[in-house]
Image (cartoon, rainbow, N blue to C red):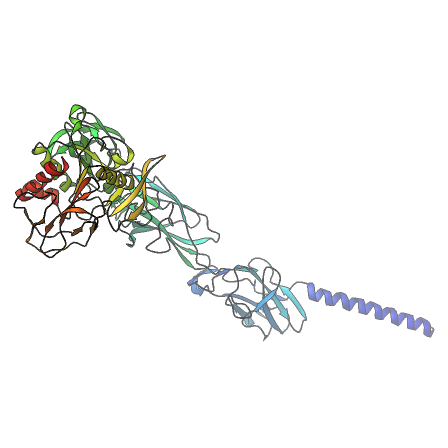
Length: 612
């Protein structure tokens, strides 16, 4: 063999060896990883900020895991090596090194290594929300490869789950059937769902009160409730349905997020429990004519009784189901309508009847505070589990809704005053502030005086304006209650009927009177201090336990006052424009008028000498 042929053969062998080594190296770098133990992230979801300890999804009966970290474990199949494990983000970038990296491993299952990651980047900050994978580097092998197969990624979350109620049906529950509760599908699966039933507070800033709870399927977005608490039907009232969940990262979340949720933050979470409701008109019905009252009885028959001055003037029986009850008040007055269903539920609501026909020309108009009746009515209008009353800041209420709290505060006092006027045959016509605001029923046209019966916590702004104009043009107004005329409210018309909102608190009432905090002790004697307007009867004196000082405007003329010497007056009368205003801060004024001769003397004097 020639030297030339030998050289060619050697060169060819060298080329083959070089190419083979190249392909072997590439195979080593790209072939199947030489690790075993079915490596996968455990747990597959972590929340490095808020997660707790939960059972291991892969070993439910084993020790509880810390879900603020995740782990990988594997062993080498063939030969010893030093392994590093790197965390890779969704863009393929290496962002962290798993704990345990840099160890020299011997092959075999008895030498399984565990690598951990607490969800932080190399700079120590929390890893952003997202899906992360792992890359293993074997230093001696000179190769890197991704963890293969199922479980090769971990989901990082940094916020608590935010469950949200979608709806509850029916929104008004009368005890028939079950309620269906729906919530939004979560972005991260829930492992546990607990439905929580809260009683809604009736005062601003009060906390929700948990009544009962029950577990629901974490795989569904629905649950049902039988409407019972401790095995008994839930009491009538407004309820909010909440959720307590734990997601796949063992992180708790709640709806609502706080025990004092802000208005508007719990849409769809409310339900009214009313086994018997009645919705009387807030405007007067003509005496002797039928009044229509919308009634819902929860499928029960019921009895009803119409009372005036605590005497039954009409009664009857109603069939099962929802419908309209027609009652006929025989004469003008403030009535109570009592209903009682066959299963024992009861409700009392007011009904106003006004004189009709020729007798409707009385010079004095008596106005009842129907807006304040609804303003304090604890009812959820919009299904958010929070009662809609005018006591809540920025509130708006629907005036076309049932009165569910029974007879409104002050009803007895208001009825007593009207009954006394009627017993003395003092001519008047009856209406409400809602009727005046909506232009229904009697008006101030042709009147000489207006008597405001009861505490007008909220007065329709349009009525406030019209009453001021009424006085300036020669009319007279009397208001005798405490904490009255402090707020004005816009009343407008919507598709569902009249609504009230935009409460405006007034430092002075529409007539310029400023009211001070209630004062006094038992056995106070109020006497006339000055009386150029002729407000007080001869020898005027009143015994009261407490009163609210009323301070007339500085521009008022012919100011008459009564009270305790050296203290602000409890009663003030004055001239305003061409008319007159008399205001008093007397608690339970109407009830006193029913039995106290001194109060009766004062009331009749104001009625006959000022209003008429």
